[in-house]
Amino acid sequence: MSGVATALLRRVLLSVLTLLMLAVFVFLATEVLPGDALDVSLSADELAMMPPQRLAEMKAGLGLDRPVLTRLTEFLGGLAQGDLGRTLISRAPVSDIIAYPLRNSLLLAGMTLMLALPLAVLLGVVSACTQRRSADNWISTFCLVGYSVPEFVTGTFLVMLMAVKWAWWPATITVDTQGTPWSLLAASPLVILTLLIGSIAYLTRLLRVGMIDALAGDFVERLRLTGISEWRIVWLHALPAAAIPSLAAMSLYAASLVSGIVVVELVFSYPGLGQELVRAIAKREVHVIQSIAILSAALVVGLNLAADLATLALDPRTRSS
Amino acid sequence: MNLFWNRLLKKPMAVAGLLVVVGHVLCALAAPWLINHDPYQLLDMPFLAPNGQFWLGTDDIGRDFFSRVLMGGRLSLVVALVSGALATLGGGVIGLLAAYKGGLWDDVISRAVEMKIAIPSILFVSLFVTGFGQSIVVLAIVIAIIKMMGVIRTARAQGLVLVAQGFVMAARLRGESTIYIVLRELLPNIMDLLTVEFALRTSSALLLVSTLSFLGLGLSPPQADWGLMVHDGLQSIHSQPWLILVPAACIATLVVGINFATDGLAEAGGLEASRGIAGH
Image (cartoon, rainbow over all chains, first blue to last red; front, side, top):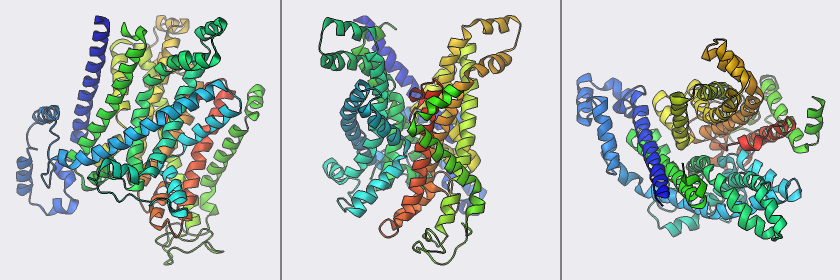
């Protein structure tokens, strides 16, 4: 039991370390970049008009004149307490600005995962079992096309077909940022469909490779000799063996899911973090950009940790390391 | 070589993909001589329907759309090729270095790669664009860094296998330097792998460039670019759908073509590409 506990603790600590390094990286990235937070948030005209003394006063007011290390510790201390800071110009708490968009984006991520995983498992298994025959060829072709085409193109095609041509749904989402989860989901079948195409393509490919490896394993041959039905071998023995290495590869999927959500939100004007990010970039709200970067990275690290923990739970061999 | 072509020709999708890619590249190269109007000139006639003079009509501010579509792949292709090449070579050398030096080098490189992978690419780009501004050079470098991570992993894994072999030990005993061993002994041995990586990274770099342009973080107006054109076309989606459909179809066919071709070429060459493809 203690082996499991240390392995668990190790994974959690590693994730925390990764997050800490990420926070430092995000802070330094906005720090070493030319110009400080004030310079980038003011326009060139405003900067040229402002007397140097006034600029220095503003910097002192925002605490930007203090040494980097002091501000870094403050930034990290704030993060640890869940304080994301305030925006530079309006002085509004960042957490207030991004709370609802964050909830809305998580809603999309959760919905996509819930629908994509079972479908991907089904397609991956069928594809691996019918290797190089027609079902596999169709599924593999769909997958290659599915993740080759960028989300904004898939989304735009879906809008043109289902919103413009057939008028099943409106092309853009008009639900308020603070609307109920249900009203948001009801308004966004096209958003979810766009995300699903990419996700299913990606996950199916992952599972197909894993299943092919698993089905070629010695243990499958031995099971066949005992006379168990092929159905049971595939679903009860080969699939769990294939799922474990696939879980580890999910780290890449998590990052691409977040990127996909950012893009799709803009295509459909879905009120989530992606919209907020682009607005923040246009207004040079450095704190909002930093917070969104850290939160998304935290989402990716969290999904990776979940995959790691699931691997630990499913595969006793990984508990020793 | 004959065996390679025979195996390739048995894959109709790969051959079709290859033809699409060659067609796109030829069009992009010949575009300046094929266009019949200046792609940047405002003609004072916005939203014209396709006609004999303007084959695909004019766009929202009255520029000849056919000429813009022809020119629209050139810049993103150049950015994708440059960042694909930088990512492959840089990633190859760094990955091999990690495998050869081991110890602290390996730890630091591997941890940095893991950390980078945890940051979604779009956010990574937006952090850079916020600070360094939006230029083609910045874009190519940032995309190269993003796409390098997968190459480092592949090269490191392959490097670990190579380092254990006799010729590396022999070179070390001859007193060759680390740089010599990595560049002259290890790198040539993973060239076939890196060729596949180059094709894969270039196609996903192309995806990223057009997505970024669509978001307003990549190439900027008035540049003729497919991602930008899809974005601009959204406002006239009901009346002039071809303003979106044509550039969107161009991006889709090019990337799908590259991926089908790479898949087929790698398989014909005895490499498993599907494992290397790491999504966006």
